[in-house]
Length: 110
Image (cartoon, rainbow, N blue to C red):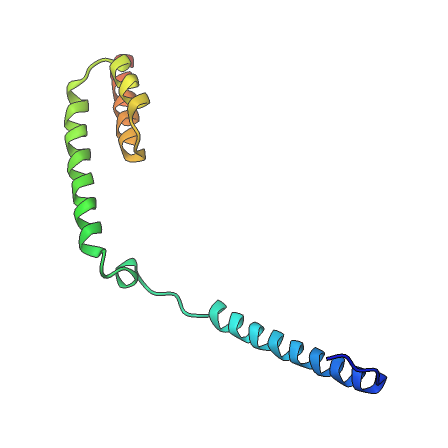
């Protein structure tokens, strides 16, 4: 509410500043407590519900990479491997294909 007394206005402003200061201190304490929380030791503890699904997806990916590796051993053309490399989407797939290309080029040099 409006007041004409200057002393009362000063007290109100002072009280408002004090409340704001206290709120800032509480916020800083909250941030400090969050900032220095110990990190959890493993992904498995963080995500217990999705761990079986994650594990299954990882096994499927490993199986797919093993199949790709066998397929790459049958290919003897660098051009075919280059086409596969351009079409590959996953990092691990590209990594295997690049290794196969290096192997073929090394065999050609020998």
